[in-house]
Image: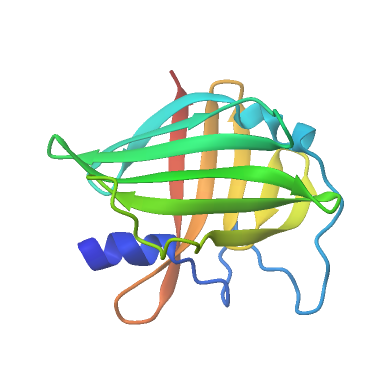
Length: 163
């Protein structure tokens, strides 16, 4: 199970699912601003991996939107994520780091998981391997490519409701 959860966050970008995309080789990310994804702001909750998920997104401030994520299974914190979507060179980049329940990091000290913007399309914002979708003012979906132990990949949908 631990490998599966770890593999989830080391996104496989060589493949794409029905709702996720990759940036074509050599292509530049499109122009975008935080206002294109400001609808993510808020306190969201859902269920995944047999537990409760919580995701909190702050408003655009200082060129970024900060977030925290927590998975709780069997009454214990499975892991945390901290990160942001930030404006960089007239586009957006999604960056994050992972932590065990005791706040010990998964990545090396200076390592950050970074995902380039692929496309902004109405109520969807596509990063490599991740798509953020506004379903309504009180519901969002996040689609993610996850790696499996056998080397294959699949797309998983995370549905969140606003608290």
